[in-house]
Amino acid sequence: MNPKTRLKIGEISNQTGVAIGALRYYETLELLTSERGSNGYRYYSPAAVQQVLFIKKAQALGFSLEEIRKVLAVSESGQVPCGLVRSLLQEKIEKLAAQIRSMSQLKTELEQYQVQWIATQPSPQSDDICPLIDTVEIHS
Image (cartoon, rainbow, N blue to C red; front, side):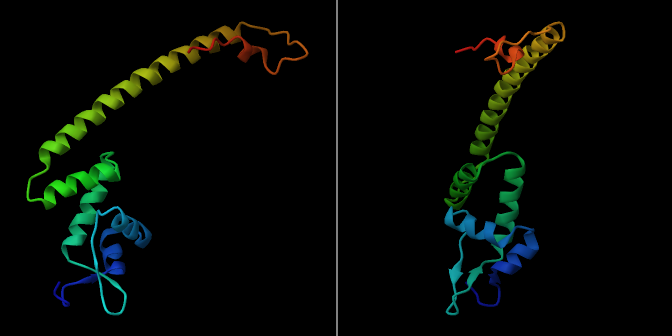
């Protein structure tokens, strides 16, 4: 790496808005690489700025750091990772759709209990914590 073009970790942090601790963490996950100078400082290539901004954008789309590592590995091997990105995105969409269905079912169930409980005047027994919750059926 050309000593005139290398950047310190603080410069990367300032240019990307990513905390120094996060940059160090990215390095432990092999999302980012640096070289140690004779003074012990980490030095990064100017391309690291673009790489960190890519990581931020991918995270904004919901990609995990592990998924981002895979995408970067494909890119570093000289291939365009867009096929992998499309595949990962499709998986995310499917998972979100399943979560939405599940949350919608839970919402409907909670609304049913709410209606039921408005009309209920429970008479607690001595060992009851809340008779309303006692009416809930547990689904296995």
